[in-house]
Length: 159
Image (cartoon, rainbow, N blue to C red; front, side, top):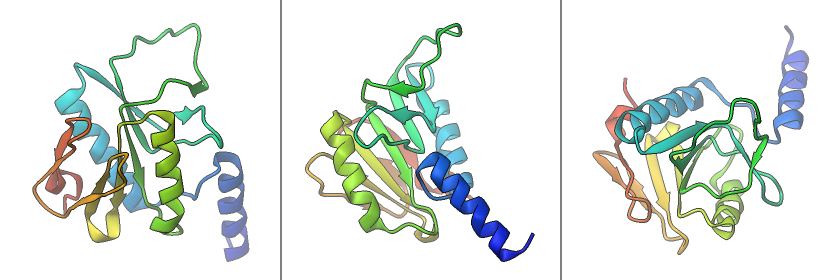
């Protein structure tokens, strides 16, 4: 596949999903977060990947955490109107932090308690609360004061 064809694929993905195409490191960080959060909190909470939230404009965080949900397998939901407790955004290679700040602010307007911004190249997680004063973690436990969730950063960025 030539470069122009690859760019067309990226463009189609971005048009369909409304966000940049994820990368290998993005996927690895997302998978690790889901595994760790599910291991620690899966009995009490539902950890979801790529579920669209009904807000304007609609947004699809990489990870969203809700109080335990009971699925109705006969009636699916395309967009969730109830805000999650926590959302996680993992920055993609084609994104900047400046692009994600307005999205984080919209999550808080919806009623989300906290937002984690994961930056794989820096192996760091910034925890935002509605006051928009992030706390940045580069090692050890990531402690979220608003939601109470915690993960060990070394478990997310395993070598």
